[in-house]
Image 1 (cartoon, chains in turn cyan, purple):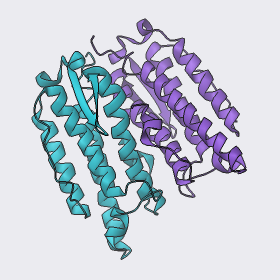
Image 2 (cartoon, rainbow over the protein chains, first blue to last red):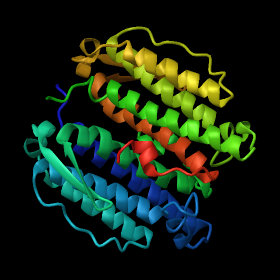
Image 3 (cartoon, chains in turn orange, yellow):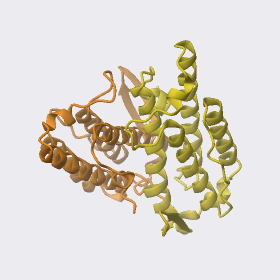
Image 4 (cartoon, each protein chain N blue to C red):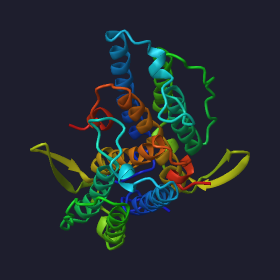
Length: 168
Length: 168
């Protein structure tokens, strides 16, 4: 076994998106059981100028579909960003996972020095593949999925860290 | 350039702990400027049964010192977990960074299949080095540093995601 760009990215994303999907299932079931409008959770935020749950999940999936496509040198799939319900968010996660599964190890491996150009806030930022994965993709992905967890936890959903990590 | 166990771990941890340290500096300066007892931030939580800021930072540093030591096959440094102020937390981050810097690429590389045994909740869990890093260490580390950020953000500290990721 030797660590590769593929192993450090695609299977990790798929695994964590599976955990995120299960967390959203718990949130949806909790809303139904407690007769709380699910939109309250989908639109919940930790601060007035932070993104709501729905946007956290849109960005988390954006980051990983962008990573898979850019490291493989193929077009980044475009999503509409119109999810407003738990089923919408689950569908977005599912189509992201299907896209990640469509990218092979052969397409990703060897991308350590592939040039990746991101346009953020109207400015181009150029990365090589390895620092793009380690210093941009993984911190951003984990930031948004952890914030999604924190929003739900702050709003009373019973979750433990193992729901997030999938360990134990 | 070829991705290695060292590059996917130690420099990432050091970089993110540097960002975390800068975030805590902002929190400390904010408390001072607004004449808010810093202990309010250090003890803040997102939910009554979630850990406070101080514990988030203790666990985040535990995870990475444990990773560095276990992958290198050396003893895990033991810390007292008695931090209760911003300077205490900064000192903990600094000693963790110093320990991470003391571990060489040669000690970490090739640890993909090294056996790592963790005792959690009284039960032994055995990992190989690579899944330990990818599926345990990184999710846990990012979980706790993102939660630290979220606690401060929820309590009114002006931060942006770039404080967390260090990008742009």
